[in-house]
Image (cartoon, rainbow, N blue to C red):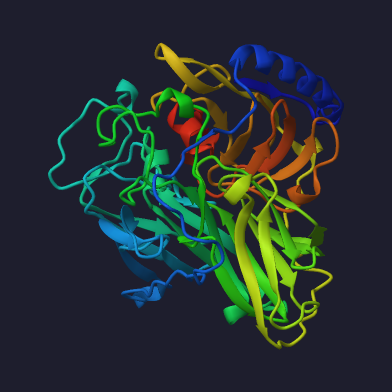
Length: 523
């Protein structure tokens, strides 16, 4: 991986070169991958699917701490198999956090530490990662830091790699989170090496909110006017079980998916908070939608449309890592796997009794719908703040100590198809990038097909795409950037918080499992 240490003067000239990188990347990627620029193949469910907009939107339960002693909130979660009703009248076996999908929501407060004790009663090892969290390395959920089942025996999986630095425990592990970060929506999910994709698909995902005084000072919708939406596609077999094309359905011996799904697995059912194409009753006020794409590989382009065809503006007030400086208006909002958006929608112009649909303009047929809102009562008007947060970091490219070039492309791995970073598949024993604690760095990323790139520990700002200005939805502080086919982008960040071993990877979960992950050592 290219590591260029440069003077501040030279950093100023980076931006103009990105257009050339993008142009070269497109042709090189096409020759290198020999695959169409798609994010995956879609599974077809084997049972009759329910009609849209009949199931009420469920809201995930909020987990209560078992202790608040010593200024630390302590939680307990059991990872276990459960039969969950996703489709009406159908019980689907799932791997769950506390028996639900999504798992229970955690509400935390900036500056107040929490400890979450996870107990693994599943038949495979698990790893918990708090996505977007500023977390010490030993609690970040490194892919080989397994929580092993009680009766686990060593199996020859995980690419044959050994990791002398892995810290593994039997049955349970207490993950410690300092919660020293801006208010935002995070999510927690399984991060086991080589098997992240099927574990998330089977249900190991949940929402985590961070609150702070900056957010509290704003007149934003609260209570039942703040609605979390975890959007995730799935497919079902004829018996109502989750369909997934794993090479090894036990998820024990051999990782990976069958050849048709190497680019990613898409489902033909759109779930929101675990319900298929749900409907949510609203009043004529302003609602705050906290949106997460919890899908393995599916990208969305969201649009809110009234029955008469009018678009309802999507007013973005936050991104992956919290509030923006000022609202950004969108007619359509692209959403890649693992991205989160904090969005206001005003239903004030709709008559009582009317409906509005949240559509997916990248979908076709039934995947073109996400959910529906039903206006059932009068609500109070809520002003949308003109300014939001003033605590966003202001990194300048002239302060960058290092510029790195990183290519995300298909290639050969272990004699088969893989997804690689700078031509190499993930190896836990190899250090790919070493960053000095406190340094500002600029990373230049280029992709062959769709790759949502996620950095652990730190948030970043998007400086450019293809040598041009960032797109409107790139505003704010992010931890995941969606690279489109043949696209390049520049991001800037500061490696602070903690030292240790972290990761960056593609959050198309099938790509991640098939090698598109790398080690980041902060020293």
